[in-house]
Length: 101
Image 1 (cartoon, one colour):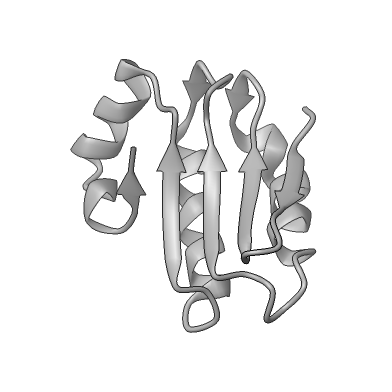
Image 2 (cartoon, rainbow, N blue to C red; image 1 turned 120 degrees about the horizontal axis):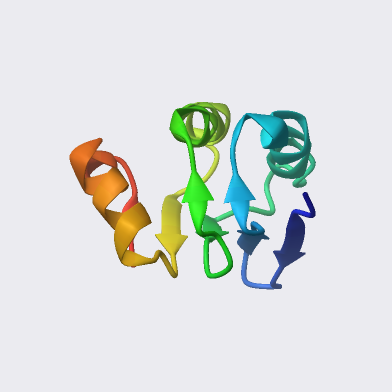
C-alpha cells in the first residue's frame, strides 16, 4: 500500500490512503504519522478519497495516531469518506473523536 504524506506551510499535514486501509498498513501508516516533524503539525488530515475498504484495525490505527499527536496537534480531520466508511465511523462514534468531512 502506498501512503502519501504532504505538508503545507500553514501546518496542515495530509496523509492520503489508498484503496484498502487494514492490518497490512499498520507499519507504513505509523511511520507516516510519526515521521512528521514535531512542531510543524497544527492540523492532521486523513484523506480517504481512494479508500473503499477498512477493517477494525484501521480504527485502532487512527486512535493510536491521535494518542501519539495528542497535545501536539490542534485538529484531527478525516476527509472524503464514502458513505459506507462514514457509516462505520458513525457507528463506532468516531465522529465524536474526529472532525469527519
